[in-house]
Image (tube, rainbow, N blue to C red; front, side, top):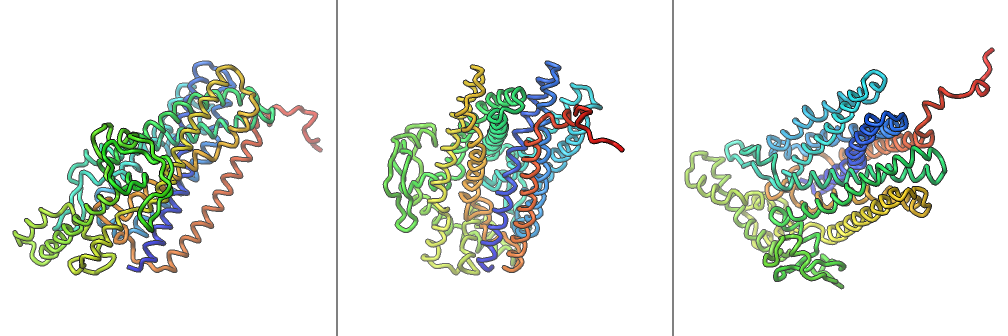
Length: 519
């Protein structure tokens, strides 16, 4: 296949995923913040908390709509842009997505209407239950989607069937409880909670700076400070757990984000600063913190962390084994009853995906020479500089968020909500957790390359047979359409913020003297 088609298909999916992920985290976090706010209203029966909940639910609803729209586009792309991927692993990958639609999306879609229009029709506790079900559905959606994505990162519970030439489920329980998927879920959800808390904190700070809706803003700020501190601490701690999951399941990703070219004696040091170079395959100007990486990655002082050179050598061996598996598979296609070929395939089946890496260079992997195999082994190394700097930026923002919310929690505890320098900082910090979330998605997806499914299906083999013109057309149309929708969404959010939380009450409470005369 034309390499340009592969690159453009990847670009389109990356744009869609990154765009979609602008809305999902805010939905995840804001839904449970609404539960907290409405719980306070139910317990205290104070009307101000009803106003607080309804205002933030308006912003939740605006964001929810666009999140759904972009999510549908992503799912369509699997069939349109990644047809062979869908054929090859659809039995496994499709199941969590189907469950997400049936269990989670229908749940949140059903109850979101009751949440918005049931304020005066449901009892307080009943409406709180509806809000909780919306939050539950939203977070269950994330769980099932990340189970599917986690399987792409660590394809457990599935085997290749040489009779059907496809991957098939062998242990759905293993798919569900995939350690990579579970680690990704808790880390991603914590990041979403942090984003929502910064969103609420920043807008509340804006109101306090303007001297508007002070009571509302102080209450919102208090909830955001406590919720955000717990969420940001969780995001960093669970991010560490997500990194630990890489040690056993995605060693190359771990080595790349640390720019660790050579395997070091245990425990390995953490590179605090450096400039990785793909040209000479080394990291210049390294500043290392001794032992830290080994302790984080292996939870021990005697286990080494494999470096890129060692992992490339392992990949080369697996490619050679994969060529044998490919040859046996071709024999079985011609004669499914060949016992010797089946035995050979069973011996080398786990390396078939590595043999398929050679398809990028030769039509038949068995025709590849030693130089081509070595070249393909280096394809297993993702973009090291991008991984290295993206990880440090993401982690740095994570620690900044802890500092931000620790300060906010201290100030609201001391009743010093109007500390001007902090309010300005809170407003300026609004984009930062979104940047960290996007960088985290880049780490997850770029770090998996060259695989669509780690060790099973190379990305270069998964795309549909499309033309470059078709892909450019859809990329441009997608950008224009969703760019316009983003402008509309931001406009609606800013308009809602400008009106403020008491817009509905003010409309009904306008003095008669200000009403226009009626002829």
